[in-house]
Image (cartoon, rainbow, N blue to C red; front, top):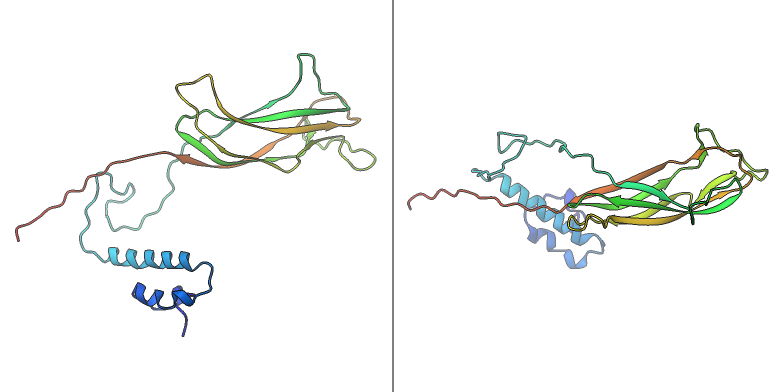
Length: 214
């Protein structure tokens, strides 16, 4: 017999009492998550079997039929962090063909009601301005490169404060640009970045409950 506490998806269990019968003996580290998921499925099935449905003030945006099964992507605005590179210890500082320069990559959040969560930047290799690879040194090392060469983690970038517009919500990380016997000219590097968007929202709904005489 299949143990319902270790594999509830393969058994025909109709109550939580059956599921928890062998709960204390289960050695599955995910048993609490399995129990929660199983309880959710049972409750969903019981609620779907109810005959009457009362919509709130804001019913499902894609369906006139309350029981319709609809899933569509939401229209999400393009919200992105802003990036800058800061460098130079003085007005006459220059990046030379043989040099080690500390750069700061700064990410800013210009929105007062949005958090950019888990912002991670992937650093690409340095190339010449036309996109071709930079010349290599005799040992195979690129004549211009950036460290760290993989990715930079910013974590969460909080919202800005609308009451303090001069104080931006920004985080900075340090990069090092190394050039060794490079040719004079323009170079570039790209960044790729990943993040999720978090909104702090709230809402109020009202349900009308019709009561008839007993």
